[in-house]
Length: 278
Image 1 (cartoon, rainbow, N blue to C red):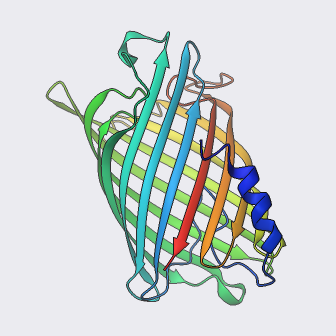
Image 2 (spheres, rainbow, N blue to C red; image 1 turned 90 degrees about the vertical axis):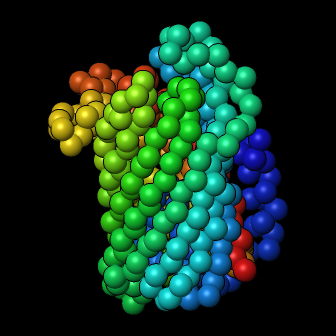
């Protein structure tokens, strides 16, 4: 849907490329260290399409509506509503039947604090904390209740007014309630991105990330699943609005040294973000 319209949307936007440099985050998966200024509000729609399993057919769509507000020049707060849709066929019975209908999945809230600004050649550093809950499994789409607590360390280096690097370390502890038992899992992800401003508000680059899952953590610390994703990123900053797009392909995964893990993760992901400041 929105993802297929992105090339046309981007082409029309380039007709009015501004001359000023962009200060917004040019990545779709990774976060920069800069927070919203005091009194600024930003609303963003995230659309993530996930597809491809080891067998059968699998398509999932995640929608997220985010509103973030700068409380001070270093502290921002955000609130999220999440929705999902799964269309699954020919897979294990645990995936169940799926109509592909969009449904409300849960909510999250977050705070981010900028320890050091990435301006003036500094290495920007910010911390992030996000509690949340969800009603359906992101892997299978089956009903279940889960509580999560996500924390991030976000780094950003601006080498010039055109070239920018970010790196994130993310830890998310999940408590899933199923069959009257709370199952625990930790997901640890390292992501990085490099983007170059080619003209006006247009940035092109790439992102990579490695996701690791530790079932039973903190009772056990054995890694149960992992996957490496990478792909190109495009971003356009129109001043009061922006659009970001990234396509990610699973390059490797396992629990062992197998080529890919198509049980716990998907083969392909694509994310579109559309935002406006007011």
